[in-house]
Length: 510
Ligand SMILES: Cc1cc2nc3c(=O)[nH]c(=O)nc-3n(C[C@H](O)[C@H](O)[C@H](O)COP(=O)(O)OP(=O)(O)OC[C@H]3O[C@@H](n4cnc5c(N)ncnc54)[C@H](O)[C@@H]3O)c2cc1C
Ligand SMILES: *[C@@H]1O[C@H](CO)[C@@H](O)[C@H](O)[C@H]1NC(C)=O
Image 1 (cartoon, rainbow, N blue to C red):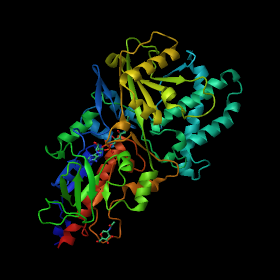
Image 2: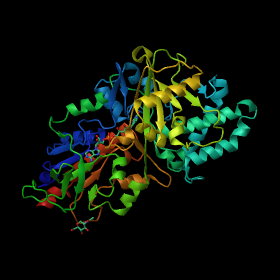
Image 3: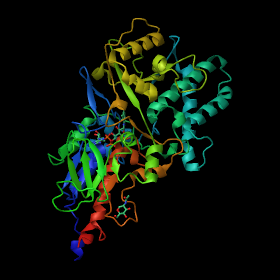
Image 4: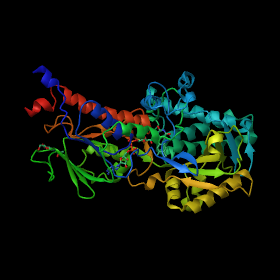
């Protein structure tokens, strides 16, 4: 008897919505534990989701995720990448794993300003250090409690205005350009958080995001190698591609035609009219998609506290603009280029006129390395509404505006990028933006609410009908690939332990 009660109920019909890394991870774990009725339903024609490798000429570039953040033993993405031998030796070295950068890699910088000046570290270094200190202080309220101001942006701006005059009193000449540099850094921080303005990012919860040790590294052959390898370990036909899900009917509210006489609690309705009956569904669609379709995606709809957390939590746009040059205008060792608008001496990271001034939001370019492999390619970063507006322009318009920008900042009127390619995450119908952040007024409880399965605890309906994974449901690693993967594993484990515990559906079926 006992051994029978311990037997996993491997026949359960489980559907996973979305074939990004969280969905793939969930499927992998379930199948390893003997569940054989597992399918993934994916809206698009490909797997990988926001992990997407592309090409710029002969170069491999990342349209979506680029780095393994914190590549060390504790990071499951790093462990998998090592197992699959997708990283170079240096990235795997004990030395690199031990480096703790606290989430902000120390790139070798170059600074260019809107008057065509190239400034040195004597002038700009202090502004960078000053900003980093304020950023670190912003992260501390999570552990100390309290919140002197509601958002990271308001806190940094208030503290910068209060402390900078004292901090830089020996160097009045550079005061204005350093304040402008704080604006540049605020705009770049919007890219890191995937938000329009740092005024939208909650101060008290900012430190909830946790970093792992390890020097951020990339995949020489492309990030998609990771999801491709994981897919190879799954049964061949596990994914149903090109099937956007329209609505998940749960709580026995609908019975599709293919339920074969058995009563299933959940029916998945696709946009093309097809339906699938399920015992359990793991939803991994991006939070942006969930926000946009919050009134139609689930029937009966979300319980109010869950709906409110979906509405309150942040999900914004961060895009990349890749530009290739014949010759570099930056130093050989440069890893990050900052653009500083000398007229922006008042602290504000919001651009008022999108049409005329969206380009002011593009204040940072990383240099793709190593140069021997990439040639001279920059990756520009732009977040928020300006980024969403940029997506609506033609590639040629973007190229012209970026060219104009770089001519102003380098003082070289002949600079001409050879090629350009940009991402358009806001207009991707199944992403609706880039990634999540903890918005003003939110806390870890909102993330818990997003992750909470349905029906809610205490209901006497069949448990674990709809489960929720995906990047936005991870309390400390939201917005990352490893957070997404861990969330998929978490929901798979929830089902596994449910079916292996004595109170699971095996006994309730008797
Ligand atoms: C520009 C950019 C840069 C990034 N950089 C990094 C980085 O350097 N390092 C890092 O760790 N992370 C980075 N990230 C974040 C990382 O890519 C994501 O956190 C992670 O890939 C999310 O995985 P997921 O499985 O949660 O979601 P997704 O990968 O988005 O998967 C969800 C899947 O659901 C599908 N779907 C959506 N709606 C439906 C529907 N109705 N029916 C069926 N299927 C549907 C989608 O098509 C998608 O395939 C970046 C993201 C972006 C956009
Ligand atoms: C689910 O069904 C049960 C039993 O019929 C009912 O009591 C409950 O209110 C339903 N829940 C929702 C969210 O509709």
